Image (cartoon, rainbow, N blue to C red; front, side, top):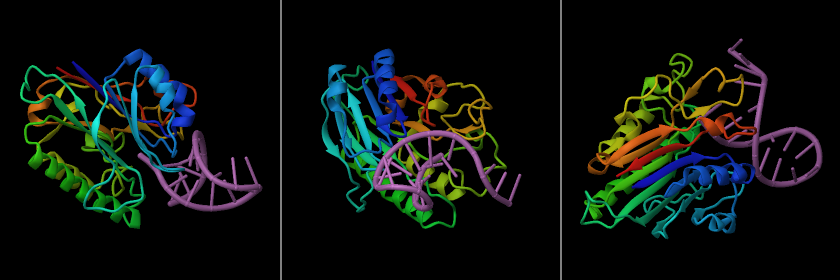
Length: 265
DNA sequence: ATGGCAAGTGATACTTGA
């Protein structure tokens, strides 16, 4: 059994107690965090809970981390083809014994905080699409090098894959997070041999992972599904469940994103 | 059509997010 989750915490400092509580309750093998918004990381606090930490921190913006029961190796914090000061990726390899994958003893995890893009006519949108191209290359390289190793790509993709992942398609037309070019970039990544685990199960309509802080968006369920867990095709068959945990979004001072959790045999 | 909310920085108003 391998339980893995992703959560954009929008400042780990502010959300630390919530993350600690969530870990105690759900006890995942791996938790991928985005937007920790700090150069430092409170590793000692997670160590007390039995979790190892790896992180790529940055002051003010971005920053990603991975907590895990097992010690990881093969840490990568940059796409080899793309120089970027923004800390948005963290790849690591974890020990994992799978009955269906007897030849591999590991699973590779790629934690992503995909750029937001701001607006379709913004420089940041160009950056987002360029970033996604390098991300695609990086994953393609992984499949070439380690064709038999299970891969999980998860995180805040800042792309709603389909219209069903958007509360109001008209309101989000011609916008970042839903534009055809972004969706095509995601599709190109999926076409390498990855599946959106959430959609391998029947789900409630209007299932979202992010809701704006403003205008009571959570209460009115006006959200987007932009936090995803992708698994390599063969490994995705081992996925037993993939759910969005809306509970933390209802807490006092919540992150605008909420955790997504997948369990693999 | 607009702004609404939150977080970080640093000490105020600005930037960024999605």
